[in-house]
Image (cartoon, rainbow, N blue to C red; front, side, top):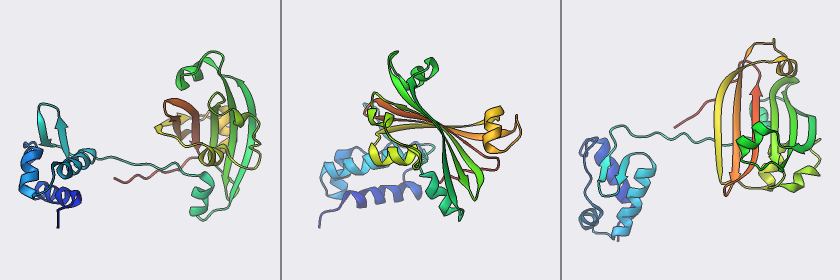
Length: 229
């Protein structure tokens, strides 16, 4: 039976973890590896590509392939539906639409979303509650050039994130995390004092290079995000 790329990958990974292939050391070329494993070069190539994608090895044209000195750890995040997130905490979920308006994109947003001067956006402000307490403040902008149907959609009962997930896929996303001081508006929505530190995420999603939405999600004090890699 011919060896599979998974078996090649597992064996190379074993050699790395057991020190047979030391950090920084050069890897044999694919032709030699294929001969040693008795398989096609394409099989070795796929195993090597996955090891590179996993951050275990580094492949450079003309310089060859080396075991990374420090393997790269990749954190993968999903984009949760806030209602499901709250339900998983064992709390009762409630959603409120605070503001909904189609308008010209302001200058700062055009720069963030790579929009033209005449582009319009759907601006939505929503609140999400857990057991009646403020949980998340959502300030979202949807590109109407990419999703014109958002202008006529009624977001009274269903949040925009849930609608977007069911309406349009995305190919790329950028997420940033930072602390912000509560201004008067956020303090009122989240039931905290003005100036209190709050956790905020900003997320932009694209579909094949075209910006779909930009959103700021601000959470009440004590919110925690856990990642695994």
